[in-house]
Image 1 (cartoon, one colour):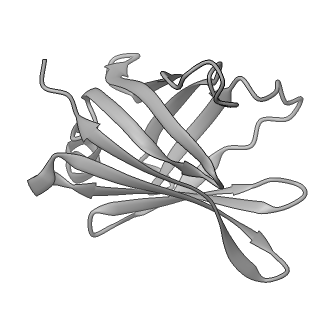
Image 2 (cartoon, one colour; image 1 turned 180 degrees about the vertical axis):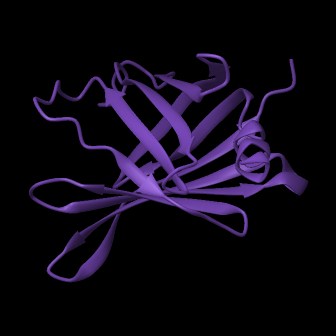
Image 3 (cartoon, helix red, strand yellow; image 1 turned 135 degrees about the vertical axis):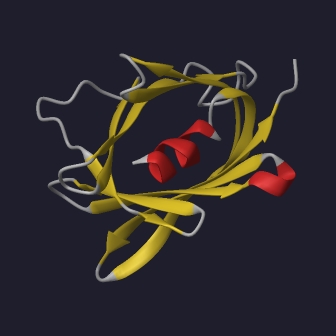
Length: 148
């Protein structure tokens, strides 16, 4: 479990997110810290995009933890797009410097990759979905560390 905790601990801190969701520019302020006796990493994302940007009101919270019994990372993703009736949990394993969380939504599987580049103090995030057997890009994001 120590390797998993060390990996997640690299995400602790203040970050600026930039990226694209289709043709839409993404700009967010991201804070990450341990909660619940360091059981979960709490990641809070808040849009800093201009008012005319469709994502200007977007906000999300991720709870990321590691289940030692199953040997899996789990991610609970809550955001302002909707309030789902059923909770779909993302599951993933650590491979090198990345975790790919798989969310098995009823209509289509969704993948959310977190890749760490500790030398550059950044994370690259890739969101894809499966459609007709093909992986299609939903969003690409980069987290750059803010040194307060």
